[in-house]
Length: 378
Image 1 (cartoon, one colour):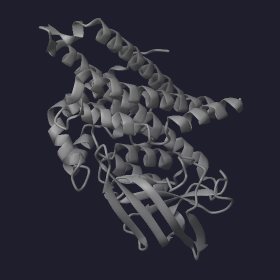
Image 2 (cartoon, helix red, strand yellow; image 1 turned 135 degrees about the vertical axis):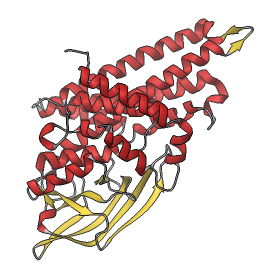
Image 3 (spheres, one colour; image 1 turned 90 degrees about the horizontal axis):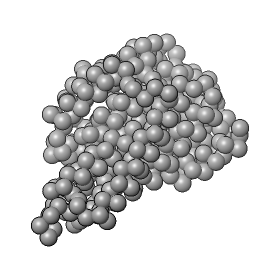
């Protein structure tokens, strides 16, 4: 395996790193992240102009990247500033459109790439415990279209989005893989209501309620009842994205901790000269490199035609990031002492994000069980 990025990817990473460093300082980030909108429309447009969104999609869909390593490079760079703009929604919805969308539906991808449309996946439901196949929201035929009724939780930027990709059951039991359909629903559709709230680590989510929401026949994405494969494919890209984001956050936390150990003094010497702290830091550096390997494996597996190989690599990465992310957060704060918990220190926000990444698209326990189950299918 070639671990060197292409020149185009290195240039993209350099551009994004420089932009984030100059325009997305921690005070700016926190003002955006904990504001009423949870995103900045002007900065979102500028990210689009830089090609950060286009790099998430293949040329066939109007982008200029789209490989696993392209996605990893973008999200690792964004995590340097804990960027909260709706990249994950654009990626997940756009990849679902690219896989299963009709020609008319794929036209939405262009507006995702240029930043004019904010999209979100509305799939998670209360009590589902991360299971992709558990869907209680119902869709029934009504005239020439469909009528949707149900409740979705923790929809990223759900109160700011213009387009929702909604999972709904058209047949089968609540936990069957067959019978799940996907629908493109305008956020201003009659009968759709949203209740937004701030996330602990910044940004916004929303509860979305669908009460007899009427959509046309053209809203159905792919074949009726066959949406699980598309959903799994799209969420897989989301898993890779948040794993790469966590890796970038670990690197920043590691850097800040090393700098603190080299400058904070006790007994007239830097505390980094104490052997016990050196051992702890060395262990942490090894763990971060293990996390890097997991992201590399997951990014490489995205091009695999073997579904089990791909999904096992993604679940392995998510387990690794959950465990190591929590370890990096805890050790970084402890090595800083009490100041590590303060709002004013950027580290506390990176630590918070590392802990919360574990709960996106399935936590460590969920993906460990999934990794084992997938291994039995070989």
